[in-house]
Length: 310
Image (cartoon, rainbow, N blue to C red):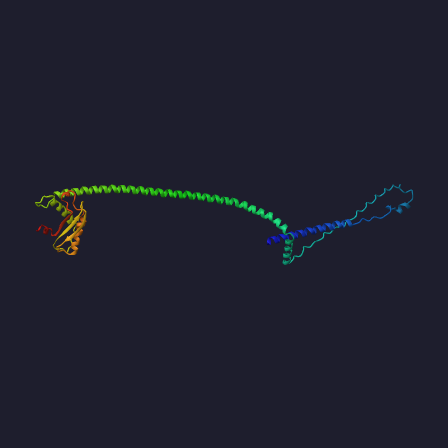
């Protein structure tokens, strides 16, 4: 609003100055045409100056009179043009702000359409220039966004490929570990079987320097040699002799172990006997299939010499 008011004020002052100059020029032309040249009727008179002293001298001494050339006619004096004094135009006194506002408002009311029409092309040109300037920026921003999106896609693809590679390596390592563990387990089972077979064969051959050479006697001895080392006997036990009933299945797996009465041991000692049987499983089976007993009674004795007594 302030810029429009200043523009209107400048246009008004310019129009006033041009009008003043035009008025001065018109007044000068009128003043020149009104000046008149003086003109008198009748012939022009030429006057000749005569020296009377020269005419009174004697003729003898007079020199021949030379013809006097007529003086040239005086040139008509040109009419002096009056000097045109420039009319000094004083600048208009500054109008009060309210008057300026009223004048500006009046000019706006007089020519609103003209000002609007004059402003429209300029505004349109500015808008076009702004659009022309912003279009390359928008295009650059769009290209930058597209490039950034492509880089993000490539980075995501690389990250996914790296994750897939790591997963494949983990799976391969797991398979290798499982295969190695399976081989180790198989080898350990074979070793245990071989050891068990050797133990069974040794148990069959072993004895306690008795006279019973039957397979059943060797079976009971092998069971004794496997269970007794697992008995964690309490220190409070002085002497004890108890019978434990063992229920097992084919292969030597123990289903139950129960202390039978009479047994002079306390509850802690009873539980230690049952736990020894469970820790010793699987009980001897291979090589003793013909004498295998699903239910068998086993004697716990301390000292061991009590088991030899009737």
